[in-house]
Length: 435
Image: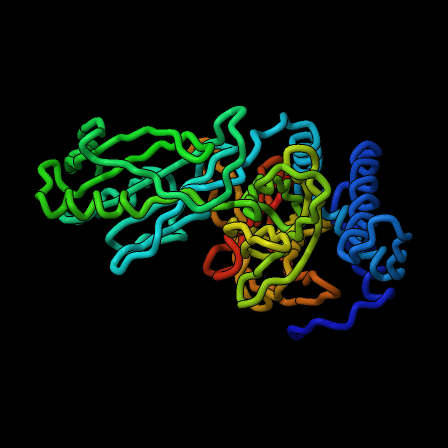
């Protein structure tokens, strides 16, 4: 069958549901109940929130849309065994209250030759941070922290890297006006930071400062690319410190996702906060999928006390998620996806593998592997190419058949490699099965 994506209709979806029922072990009553509650709640809240109507009755989705929701819920249970749904619902709804995100944040005034990053930094909850350097900073480095080893290890001898984090002072009045923070390296504690691979470490000069300004407790760390900086290098670092200010962050919004590596159909628990701590603010969740250059809304949430918000979504392909309010947009969080792979032992000599994703893998190679206990490794048994690729809506059902004779009692799995799924998916691994 050729690679195609037909129009979503009842017949196509019912055929896929029938095929799915033949290939997977039926979920338990408890798993189905969890999936049904999650799908029904997502259905109601999604339509209500995206339409902007907090109290008006939401229009019930069409029958094909309801079939799609049911299929997504069923596949979620089949592919992740109900673990993802149970974990995300528990962790999101019952997590402890995160610290309030302060309404002010540290920042640097712009200057020629300096790179500044103010989002996507791995810091504790309730903290704003900003990074600056006189060399380029990779804003997509993983992870980008207050002392990123990937940046420090490659910092040139004349390089300067500054990291500032700020937490709200308990009981301090809000100060949202822009304000300079007077700091000097002469008041800093000096130390030596060793960076680089083991056996190839190099010494950097590190200066540590702490102060309180405009309702924030600030922690400032300055790294220089040598343990014996020159006067010119110290002057450059001080000049950047002179550009440190505290600005208004009233519209700042953050986002965190768990997990960030998912299988197709696995739910993602999202959380974050909006600076200022107001309840009842609308937060839109947007996605930019692999292969596209635009953002689209996929969900919405309403802030609770302390400005916190919680949501849950699914992605069918690798990409990025972000949160947006009327006045601000969060740094994106990267999500990496694997396709769903289902191995089914049929009667007779044939074994079927199904690969579920939002794109076709027609003619891509899938490998059947057996587990060798003595060698503690997986051994290739047979390689075949996907011969069927069909789909409806947001998913494509890819299918292939293995004909190799299987040994009774041996453990088998199917694998589709990175080369076959890339660049928008990582390799996929099926359930393990015995003949």
